[in-house]
Length: 302
Image (cartoon, rainbow, N blue to C red; front, side):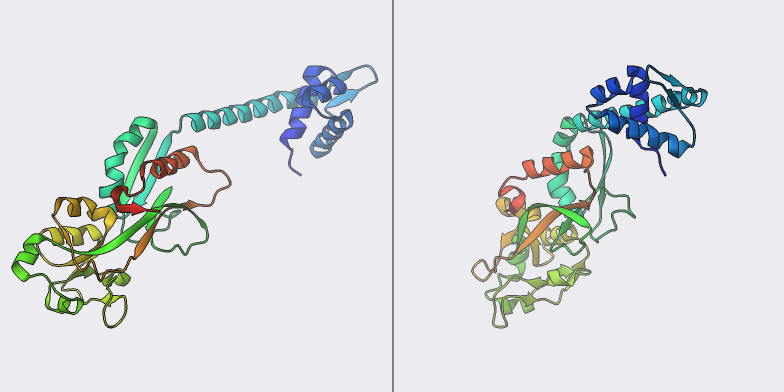
């Protein structure tokens, strides 16, 4: 059987206090409880640590050797607890974040300066991936994921929802004309996704329902690439508000089919593995995101 810290603490306290009664008072326990802890410890070690008489307690030779090591163990535990308390108050260490490229560029990157100002001891590592990753395999603390979550081993912190819209640049529309119906999209250059086929179902009402499935003329794996192609007058795309709100506000991209659009919102979550105690560096990052992503900011809604 393994020795417990309760038993070590009972032994050291009895030695320091000079009696089982005094140790029980210090530890807010009963004298019988302290006696049982000492007996269990001696049984586990198969040796006598204390010679007990009605008047005094005296350490055996084995007891003196063991108490010295017990003190070191208890001191190391106290030091470890104190270190964790300090890290909670001043989070530190490496924090690995994984997020799709557009989210890194349009949401995280503009806020990193403030986060680092608030938490200068955290070493932040931003990795960009447009595919789901294994958090443990990639040694990732937090991942940003879009859509419905399937992995029940993950905790999720909702960051908001982002609406998808059909967009084109004024330059493209000047050269190719504005489509006057959803069906007219068949005559235009459509920019879609090569790896997330569900994103090629655009939220548009038409004769066949409220999803218009496109056959892309141009495809890309990243939403940021789709955005850049649209800005370069290369075609019509369907993108989330969190990455295009500034483009729409400035007129660099124009929304099409506002009357035919379906209010389709994509949930965005910060996910991390289920732990009994969340590390301070992870908790402060999640809290920071929740606090700084206000309603409507970056095109996010709740």
